View 1 (cartoon, each protein chain N blue to C red):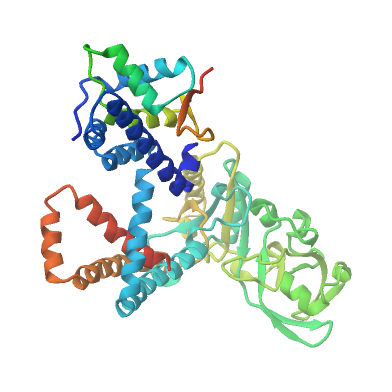
View 2 (cartoon, each protein chain N blue to C red; view 1 turned 30 degrees about the vertical axis):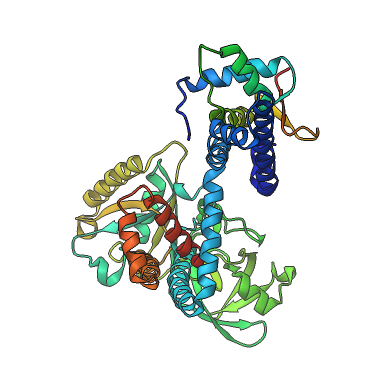
Amino acid sequence: MQEKSDLPQGTLDLLNLKVVALGPVHGYAIAQRLEQVSRGVVQVPQGSLYPALHRLENRGLLAADWRKPRAGLRQSSIA
Amino acid sequence: MTWWQRLWRRTKMEDQLEKELRFHLDQHASELIARGRSSNEARRHARLALGGPEQVKGNCRDARGTRWLEDLLQDFRYAIRTLRKQPGFAAVALLTLALGSGATTVMFTVINGVLLKPLPYPEPDRLVTVHGHTNTWNTVAFGEQHLAYFDFLDCQRESRALAMAGWLHSSGGTVNEPEEPEYVDRREISSELFSVLGVTLWRGRAFLPEEDRPGTAPVIILGYSFWQRRFAGNPAAIGRSIAFEGKRYTVVGIEPPGFRLDGEEADVFTPLGQNTAGYLRNRRPHPVGVVARLQPGVTLVQAQKELVLIGGHLSEQYPDTNAGRAFEVQPLRPEIGDVRSTLWLLLGAVSLVLLIACTNVADFNLGVLSPSTLQALYRAFSTPGVRQICRWMLCFSFFGLII
């Protein structure tokens, strides 16, 4: 079941960047943080999260670090 | 990973995606279990929250922007598998495509060599030919009309727009010395020919204007192959004398290899002006071919206008011979005669053959499938899957073509 996001695409990207700007973090933690931040206000569908992260990676705004034991630590590639 | 890396390390990337999603699900499930749900329910809930992992992965792949290439590779692999299963069909398809593409390639090579290659002179687009034009001259039967020698001299003297040079494909003759007699091809050329064309002589020099007159010392320029044959490529040939048609000529220069005038490589060149034959000394016959170079800043149209004026003057001055005679200037093209249009026609025909070959192969593809599959295909054509099918067929044909 894929919920349709009621967020415009850019918003999710921006939120992701904001969360990652605080420090390297993996995908699930981003989802958690977004849920905390938007609880009761906005639903962030987890299914859109990873494609959004990949998109940001594609555009060079995020770098993914796979060397740590925790899968897919995302960190901001704009210092 | 960069886009490029993502393309080439698909397995690794898929691996990472899988790990990431699994990790996500595990984390979410653990969290739910910590809140009191049962293990199964937690997993189910986590999965639902994420959405189908395959779909998520698909969206991730889309986000990567390498989708089209991966699809293409997939189509290729499918094509290879299918071809391997039916080698007979594959052979026929390949043969058809090979024939089509082979013919087209040959045709194109010919066209490229003959029509598309530019002339081997500097600034070839500034080179033109000057033809005569009279209503009574049959161009189809006799070729382009040339100029009378005196007309050529007058045009050359009076023209400001063109630097002109003349040539004559007159009879060959026998070279007697050194060594055995040999019949050779000869061209008579005015002294400006090489400078107008922009050709540098291999050795020695071109004719001087003083030598381009009747009664001056006979000089001769050798063609490259002739020089190799007769003098074994000896540079000391310059200054030696050879006997041509009973007269002694001094060699003053050697042509560069491959120089062609009037479509052929000549053996020897003599000055046009030294020819005292009657048919050059009156204006009625017009045997002299003319090439010219547009002066800097002059256009073809301007040159044509000037020649119209000069032609008009000559018509008035010599009404018996020059009445109704005009001069035309046209860009210089390689001498291939009427073959040009035939070649383009052949190219078109062969391209058509190639197209038919490809279509046939695509047809074969359809024929290979069983009727039920065909039905499915039919239905598929009305769905968005069309793109997939078309891509598959295209790959099939293209793959065969590459081989």
